[in-house]
Length: 528
Image 1 (cartoon, helix red, strand yellow):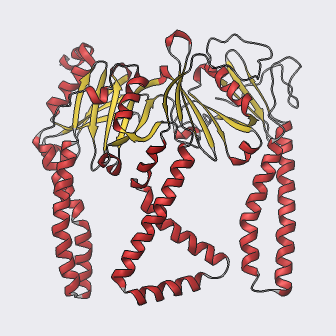
Image 2 (cartoon, one colour; image 1 turned 135 degrees about the horizontal axis):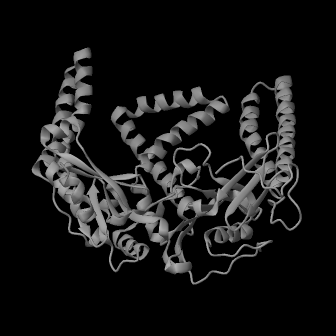
Image 3 (tube, helix red, strand yellow; image 1 turned 180 degrees about the horizontal axis):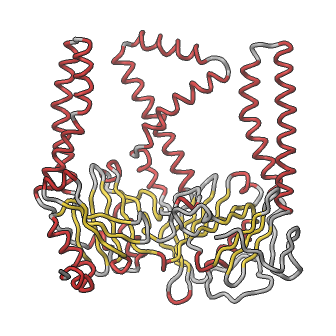
């Protein structure tokens, strides 16, 4: 993607000659920007006025005038700037290239070869949805280049955005002087998964629940500070703790955190995955595109071409695994957050029952059964178990060590006893964690896929197409060398870039690499 290419038919200050295929954004983007600016002003102005209300008199009047005047000025400025941007923005989709010309002070011209398009994302925040608009982002999947940011078209009519999305992913579409912006008719779309309302039961068991519960208390303090009541809230909290006692207050606090966090996690799940639908759109050559639609307030629509798919990852967090559930991510080229995508482009399925995940894996990969479920995983050596037991116990003893240091500093018998109890509990938990981690280790081959599994207390199972592997390597840390273990890495252009089979013996790692990639490696291994 470059900004240096200048088509000959486009003047510096205009949209190009008639019939050249240049298109404009929707004029309602001016109204959308004005509403967003108004919301930002109200978010800062209302708390300010609430805090100044106690001052009263002239100070409050001056603050009100400044807030109202500043709001009018900023909203007007946002509308003017957006109108100028609208007038200075044009885009064109040709047979070989996508071009975008924009800029107010500095004129920017970007061009992207259509063959480099990896993802097309259509999003609409609540303001855009209310106006029937959407933002379209065309990503290349590059990870490091600052010039490979997505082409962003904000904002188009929703129907136009969907039409452009299909047009970009239709490689065999003939070039047209004036491509139609009408809604494209679905061509044999196949539905692979839709949201089951029952899946919402998995939301509260995520790590997000306690984080949201604690964050809610911080939000209350911040809101109280805006209206000058933060000291009052803190004093009332301290008084309640003193009245109830430390133990009761701790239990009440935990209950509040869990309840608030549960409500928050449910709200996040509904907002993120409402109206979720995973479909396969038909394409030329038998391969089409995977299309994910989801979102309640902010809608998201992400498209991934199947020829970019190199495998899948089945993620089983601790809570989800305990209830027999998992989520599904794609391992594909071009799915990089460096592209500036607002949502997670890898997600193919939210946390759902494992049976549903396995069915979707088979459908997505066009296999009769899910490789992640059908493979027979090979165990790892006893040294791998010992290594995990050591690390588990070390992690479990951290709280006991912290409390023991405090006990030495304060000379407290209570803290000493607490440290001893924590040490025993930590060792028990660490041993259990190490055993689970070793049980979760495994690797194997099934058909055209290599499968690896690891993780504790949750686990991650990756099925990677063998023909998508570019290189392999074997690495050893200092601790692995002492244990006679090594990690086998498979490098690919997709997903995380490389995927590991952890804690094998060095001989087993090399043998598995040869078995995975075939006879093509033997000449290199026999040299010298």
